Length: 146
Ligand code: DQA
Image (cartoon, rainbow, N blue to C red; front, side, top):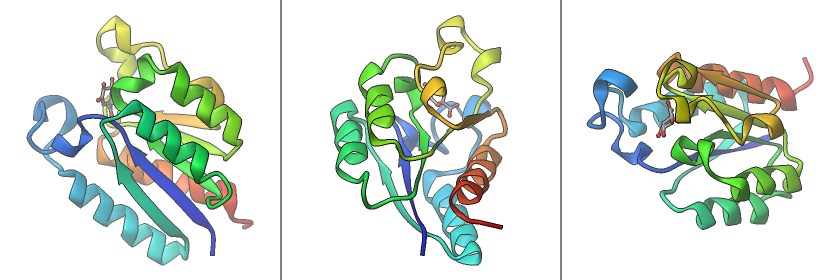
């Protein structure tokens, strides 16, 4: 069975309560539940982690590179700042899908640049919880032959 590592970056544990006008009212637990449902139907397994710590995310990617076939990541604020997470993804070579709940290009200018995008297979942004669902489907299609 193919395995996909799902990483939620900083402050995403606050979803549901955090700026609901931007990020919606769906909690992270609900998003994870939806992802698990899709994974079950598509017969892939997920390891889902949320972390507020850059180094922890770097470790997760580096230490798990042999264990997973794809990475689905919402790097959250680290999208715009973290050379370390970008380099970890480049070094591990696991096909990566970057997702964002909000459309980062229609928001403040500092969100327009993603350091992660260039090392990801692709990016999905702006569809709320559906960004994750579309992102997981993209990750599954990268690792399964159809
Ligand atoms: C986000 C967008 C980022 O700019 C922001 O820092 C986040 C969430 C999103 O999912 O829309 O924390 O990644």
